[in-house]
Length: 65
Image 1 (cartoon, rainbow, N blue to C red):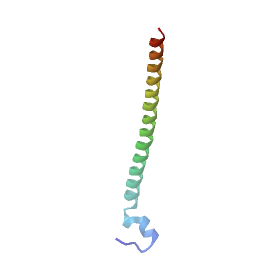
Image 2: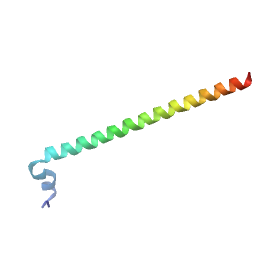
Image 3: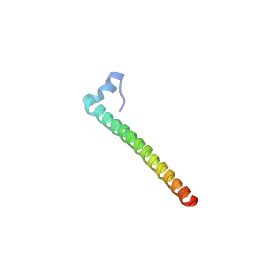
Image 4: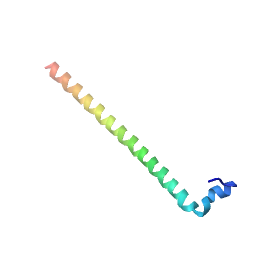
């Protein structure tokens, strides 16, 4: 389907509201998913580093006794 002008493209043959809303919902959902995934990754990595530090301290304590 070819459009004669930019305004026809933006109008999408009378279905512009539904087409652009679907694009907006899709990209919005993907953005939220990306944000939440990165936040969860950061929290998991922080938790792992805390556990590793805790294990190192326990090893030091056990070896000094």
